[in-house]
Image 1 (spheres, rainbow, N blue to C red):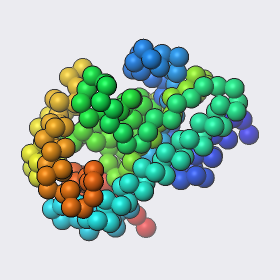
Image 2 (cartoon, one colour):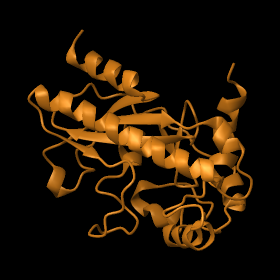
Image 3 (tube, rainbow, N blue to C red):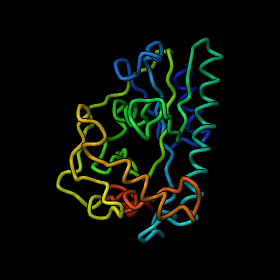
Image 4 (spheres, rainbow, N blue to C red):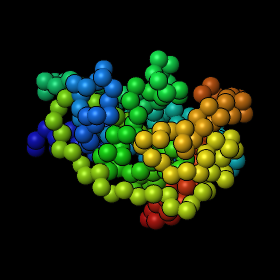
Length: 231
């Protein structure tokens, strides 16, 4: 078994539901120009936990969200150590982290969705979520940036939300604008990240610090379709 297959196999063994590779040269900032490849992973969330939400997140969803983020950080760290032991450099991008010294508010050091879209894993929906072909938006994402040459997966399986605006009309913060995503227009074209963050802080702080809403995850028909097709 070659190293790529070992890496893919280990990622799945450790808990990744989907694994894909991307060429992110031209998308990383200057600080990471030496890491032009990305390993993109998705971990599927619990349908049962998501479906029990009505108009607000539950304590169970909040705990689940944070636990899956922790799992992703462990997966990407372990995979990164494999990559480093093979003689390459890596950075495991935190699953959920806001960095205040970046140009865009409420952003991390590198957007997981960029690697996921370039790998063909899915598309950015009107909600601003990554909508995967397998599980809709019912996932959390992880990314490893590396200089290890990877077999780049095809990014040509593009789709869109079409005329659907369920996430827009369901958003309690009225933060989703209902626009299709365009890379050149940035996140604010589709989502008011500040309105989303402030609403969660004001309404759901009692559930837990950094509580997340999840309503847009629940209502997306791409996630519901996969749930209904489960055996």
